[in-house]
Amino acid sequence: MDQAAVAARLRTYEGSIPYMYKCTGGEVTVGVGHAMPSAGAAAALAWQVGGAPAGTEAVTADYGAVSAAPKGMVAAAYASLTQCRMGDADIEALVQADVVSFEAQLRRTLPRWDSYPETVQEALFDMAFNLGLGGLMKFPAMLNAVDAGDWATAAAQCHRLGISDARNQETANLFRQATSAAAG
Image (cartoon, rainbow, N blue to C red; front, side, top):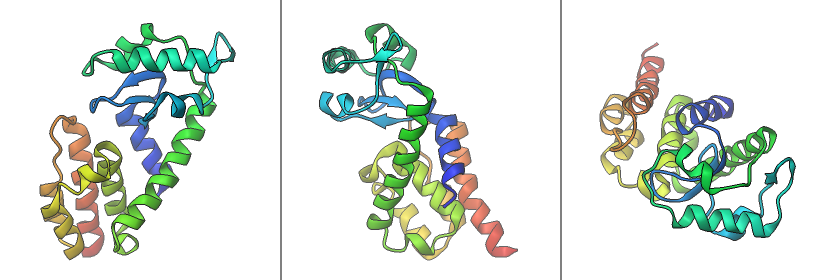
């Protein structure tokens, strides 16, 4: 899998947000879709307030404020609830680590991962990163098509609800590219 292409695609569709916000699933998130399950997980990351390292209390307060806020708002709506910010280099390091970690999880979850064409791996990665591994597993017809090498059916079955048409179309196109590569 082309990890650089995956990271670029994530930046395009997830954005790169330097403060805590709630993703569409309601998880407190930062950077390029990095979910933080607890205030402790947030405090383990590199944060700044006014250019100086943020203390645990500030990070915990921000986490609590965002966690208590309603989900479904655009990310920018959470900015005024927080004082901590993450620098671009720290966000980039986080997304690179997330791509490596998440690919390893996919490799463990999908036994035939290494046999899939690169574009199929990228499509599955995008879906799993966006939905979680459990969410990806809710697409059994698509996963069966993937295991059968039926990329056209996989493309037809990969549509996610609540996701932009552009992102869904790009994912379908990644499956279709495997069809083209197999034919060529």
